[in-house]
Each structure stands twice: as structure tokens, then as C-alpha cells.
Image (cartoon, rainbow, N blue to C red; front, top):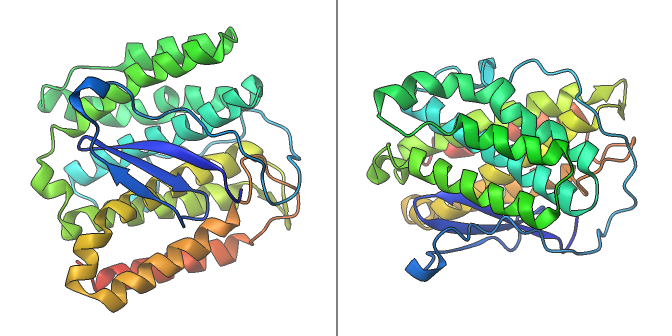
Length: 285
């Protein structure tokens, strides 16, 4: 996906633009008169790696939120990890929808409610966060009826605003602390590795939905690392550089949003890279 860039709303009032290989990520604080413009639009660019093989579909899900990948996170960290994965789904879903692939996009608009929202409800009540399940359901309904791209993007903006409000329930000082934030990144990346592995039958990718899930999660994790990079570099420049290099290598597993049957990386290679990222992050907490 060389040259193709997707804006991701990460939270704390910040835009992040992340390429699929993590080389051009940047962040900016939006002005007040740009409220609601969370950058869901996808730049239309030619992929630099082959075609768009593979078929969409629901795929077999093991349940992202209930994954052992999030084991060890405290309640606030798990809450933010699940919100991050909702963002990941919306990221790839909007890219597919903008490319005229509504059937491929649909699972990524359904999974936030089917697999993730239930994990958030208790914390939403405890923190007096305004519920947003109805907003997610409205969005998936629009995708089901194949509404115009502009309408889907507009409703996605509504959802992203609600997600930003939901993340604000956790103090910003915690969210920007590497000791708190990096375990969330690792949890999301572990989930991405699990989803990537689930996409395979033998040595070939047979389930595009799982592949795309993993792509969305990896993108959001990468965007979070980009935001943390200045503070990570100040703490340990060598470790921060290693972390960035390993992230850049990991993101090469997803050369396009639609997979070819022959994977760019094996599931074992992706899992190994996530382990190396986790090891590098341990020096930065």
C-alpha cells in the first residue's frame, strides 16, 4: 500500500495520518472551527504491491475483546484498547467502502457492536460516558443499505466524535504516559497478530476479513506509537528507534487492504515482530 495514507482519529484531540508502512505518520491538533472533522476520508492512491485479490465475508471471529491478548491490562487500559480496535475496524471499513466494496466493508462496521461494545458497557456506565451503541448501529445500517459514501463518512464522523468523548473519561496524563499507553499498544498488536493468523489456511490467506481486522488494529497501534515517539525518544532514543524500526517492518505484512492469497509475511513472522516490539517497549515504560 505504498503511498496510500489513511487518517485515523486516535483521541485526545489529535489527528494521525498513518501510511500502511508507518513512514509518514504525523499528528496535528485540530482547530476549534474544524470540530468533527476526524479525517475518516481515505486518500485514493495506487497501491504499489500487486492487485486486490480475495473475497469479503463475515469470517470466523473468535471475539477480539475477549482475547487473551489483552490479559494483564487494567480496566482503563482494556477500555482504551477496545476503543482503539473499534477505530481500527472503522478505518479499514471506510477504506473498503470508499473503494466501492460495501460487502467487504460491512463486517468492519458490524464487529464494533457484535464483538467490542459489550466489553465497554460496564466502564461506560461507571464513568458516566454517553452510550454510543445506537450511533454504531446506525452506521452499520447505512452500510447495509449501501448509502452514499459521503453519508457513511458523515456518520463515521459522528461515531468518532463519540469515541473521542469516551476516551476523555480516562485522564490525558495517563493516556500520554508510556508506562500506561505502551501496554495498550502491545495488547492491540497481539490481537492483530491473532487475527492475522486466523486469516490463514495453510500458507495462504483465505479469510480477508481477519486480515483486514489485523490491518486496522496494526494501523491504530502504529498511530499511537507515532504520538508517543517524542516522549519515548526522550526516555531512551535507542529503544525508541528500535521500536519504530520494528513497527515499520511489521506494517509491511499488509501491502494492500485486499489481500492476495500469497501473504507478504507468515503468521509466525508477524507474531515474532510483535514479540520484538513488546521487548523493545519494555525499556520505555
